[in-house]
Each structure stands twice: as C-alpha cells, then as structure tokens.
Image (cartoon, rainbow, N blue to C red; front, side, top):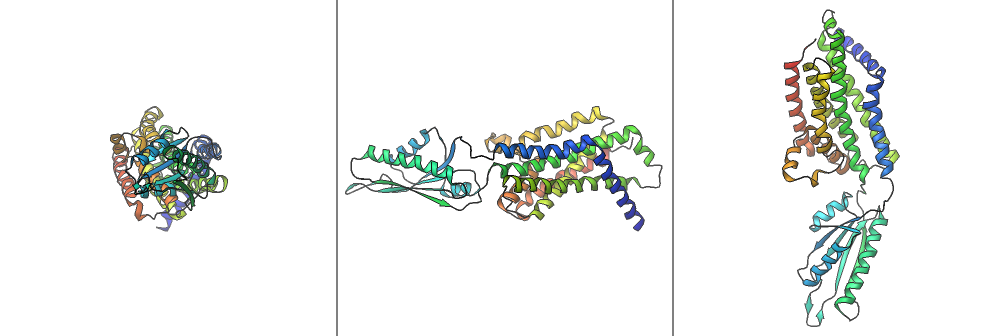
Length: 366
C-alpha cells in the first residue's frame, strides 16, 4: 500500500512537471482564462453610458397610472421590465436592474375632491448611486410634466427615490464564475484528450504496460494533476476578479472549490472518453469541439439564457457546463450553500457517471 502511494506521488509530481513543460497547454488552459478576465474586467470597469435598466410595478388600475407606465416605457434611455414588487426587489439586490419603480394603488384615483395625491416610489442601489440617481432625476421630471398635464392645480403627484443596500453585483460578478466553468471544461477535455493521444501515438502507453508500474496509477496521477491545476486556476481567477476588478464573492471559497472539483471530475471523464476512443488528434479534435462548442455559447457562461426560446432553455438546462456555471454563480453571487445547488451537483455527477462508463468501455492503450 505504501509502495503504491509513493509511486502515485512520484507519478503525480512527474505529471505536473510534464504539464508545465507543455507551453501550448499552459497557454490555452491558464493564460487565456486570465486574459479573458482582464479584458472583460477592463471593458466593464466603467459606469458606461448605455441604457438604464428599470423595473416597474404598477399597483394601480387607473387610466392615469397606465398612461404614466406607458410614458416611462417610451423613454429611449430606459429599458423597462414590468415585474411584481418582490421580483423587482430581488433583481435589484442581484444587480440585474438599476432602479425599482413602484406606482402605488392610489395613483390616479379620484375622490370627492377630484384626483387624489399619489407618490411614485423608487429604489436604487446605494453602492452604485450614479445610475440610480440619474434615472430618478429623469422620472422626477416625467412626474412633474405628467402632473402639469393632468391638472392645473398645485402638485398632486410626487416622486420619492430611496437608496437601498444591495449586493452591488456587476457584470464581472456574473462573468467570472462562467469563465471558471469554461476553464475547467477546457482543462478536463482538451488537456487530457490530446495529452493521452500523444502518449498513444508515441507508444508510451504501450511501453508503460511492460513496466512494474500499474497503468491505473498512471491514469490517477494524470487526473490528480488536472484536479490540482484546476483548483489553482479557481483561486487565481477569483483573486484577479476580487482584487483587480472588485468582484463580490458573497459565498464560501470552500464551496466554490468543492463545486469546481466536481466539475473537474466530470470533464476529466469526458476527456478520458475522447482520448480512449480516438486513434490520433485528427479524430479527437472534431469530437472535442463538437462537445465543447455548443456549451460555450448555450450554457450561460458568458450571458444569461433568459433570452433563449423556451424550448432551447429546456435543452440547455441539462448541459454539464450549465450545471457547473449555474452552481458556481449561485455560490459566488447569492452566497448559497452546497445543498442549495444540489441539483447542479447531481447533474454533474450523472454526466460524470455516463462519460466515465463510456471511457471505460472505449479506452484503448494503443
């Protein structure tokens, strides 16, 4: 037993040295993800001058309230969603909107004295006051003009804007977990598949069977190397995001690493399956790209899947990269524990089991 452990340690150390001597592998699996974080972080580090995303909750059924709602939607500066108060508050807390606007139930109501006073309430993120306050000023002008339009009497309608404490999440908070998931997928599939095909074509795997070393130890050492590198990548990318671009890691680093570990095992199984089946790189490359390319764009790693048609959302719900990126993102952005992402973990484990069985059945040493 001790002898096997010692051999495994030696093999893992040798495998790590071999990995870092491969300049192209290090570049594509370590340098490229870091460059992606830096590029997207720099591009999104400013306040920007694009549209302002607001959510409107209209509690009034009066024609005045409907007209006010329509007026807000006609302003080109605004991107307006109609949501319930709880949905809007949740999106504001997650940084998905800039302003929450609530039109009260008494807005536009009439009484014995005519139109009744009403106050439009708005909430913005106090961590990013510029955008929220700008939107508030625009809406305040709309309220004033609207008031003058519907009545010549003194001010009836009012506008109140309040800063609220939120998680202050930005695009880098959404993006970074997706880049981490993408990095793990690339590491598990490409680095394993092409490394083992190189061993096969050079005859190294065949010669390995003639040595006292058990081949399984060699496979475990190769897998352990990728796991260690994957965990290191998670820590490096999170460090760049947090200290370089003010990413908010609300959840536990330990939970992030556990999720990344499970994801690494899953995609390692994919890599071993491709490496075991393919005879050379010409066979492996199309299969690896066929697996990774759709997930790159459809898993929600770089942009939300909410804009997809319903049928496409249902299909992409079951992609392994979707499980990994969603799980990492919920831990990082919402601070949930592993139990809350148990569905994503289960999905990854099922994919690991399926691809692992395929790898065992198709794996060839030469």
